[in-house]
Image (cartoon, rainbow, N blue to C red; front, side, top):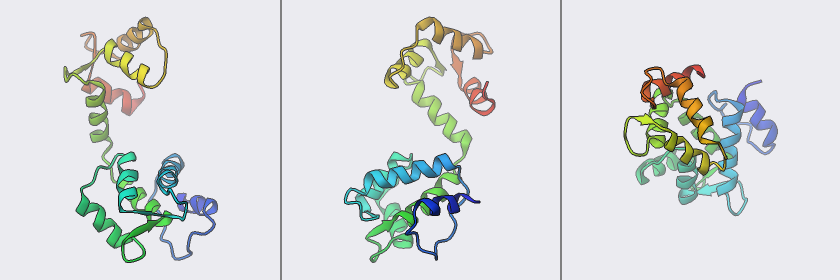
Length: 169
């Protein structure tokens, strides 16, 4: 059963003419659906230009107005003024499947290394933990850094971070 079949079983009103969504994990498919549902404020199964732009931003895509209008023109309904759940899932699945993981890891590193020092420090991880509502002791954070700090400079550099993301360690 492919991802679209699983999605269709959830969305019983999806038209039979729908092309299968590109391969993305079930978790990603669920995230796309949740984004749509969140911004479909009147719950009619469609979102307009403004809702589409914000939903796409929530999924990590900050597109310019003309790019969003092109998507509505190609995949939208009602003369390109709105897009259905099905259209949104297909568009976002395609966009997400085309992401370059290495570029995503580099963006994440830069977000964590907010001062642009080239290294993730105890202070950076403490801030992230706090933002996520986690209460992690500084000695635990220090232990994490020491485990993955291959060059022993006291921080996680971009190369070390990418190694963690790719290999899980």
